[in-house]
Length: 306
Length: 93
Ligand SMILES: [Fe+2]
Ligand SMILES: [Fe+2]
Image 1 (cartoon, rainbow over the protein chains, first blue to last red):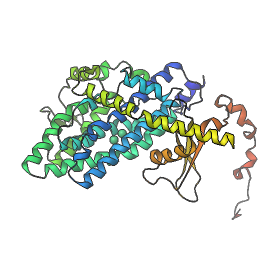
Image 2: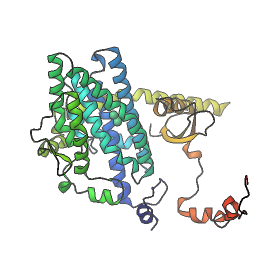
Image 3: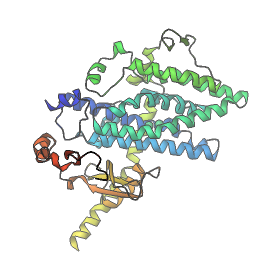
Image 4: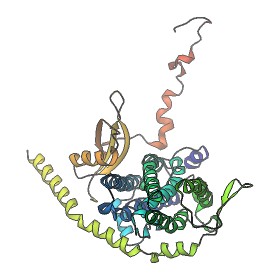
């Protein structure tokens, strides 16, 4: 069959190609949830736009949050090439039938959290997204190429925020450390459950959607991040974190995955708040969509009459 | 939004290069499609020119029949310069 040959050859599947229903369903779910994560991800940082400590930081943060909206749009467009409708995907998000990354259910309590999100959350997202650029589904891979190009600024601006704070007053340094302490473990959970408990991974790998396992990507992120934390002069809240000469990797402590399960099933600190805000933003924007449609219809009618 | 048509977006990154497909978006009319395309696909000066084309207007070849469709070109290797033997030492040819 064409599809199998294509995958065996490391080729790319394009929208009009024949593909198994299960492949299509898995992709729709993954791309939609990825898109939802981008747009829900605007909220924790959006919370600090009006209180950014300088005009420079404010302009940067607005550009960053605007990029996340753009990422959501690239991804909804990629999902639509599989024959689904954006309105339906949003509907599934708003009614809780599709999820988004659990990391965005944590609150941003201080300005330093904006730094920790850029550094750790965007950092983890980059590690997840770079291999997706080679995903077997063409439109998803191409969307990821655009997203990855934009992400590196996100991570750097976060690192810079934390670097400034950690070299500031003792109070600023404490604020930076507190943010890192709160975001470290949730960032590690962004890679998903351990490989042994990740039932869909094997199929996703076989189809060339996923290229590396959850644990491999998590290890890659830890190895990259520990030296960066040293450059920041901030510690990571894991007493078991140490370099393992033999493995050539950092060893780390066990992750409490019951927390991930709790947050994913809706019992995180901000789940209800995030969803209420999303639904309200969508409803408040209805008049804009209606006005645009009415204007287009009026113009079309005029052209018809002329 | 459900009845807004889908538009394919093409960006010319600089003068002298062709427009390249970058993605798609929904918009009620051509003008909004163009404005939205600018905001979604050229936030970093990725282009000097934008095209939006209604997806419904694009006529595409069938991927499943691409072998047969493109077959007429397959056996005409004499269309490539490497097909021809040139004597040793002949230059600028
Ligand atoms: Fe993003
Ligand atoms: Fe980002």
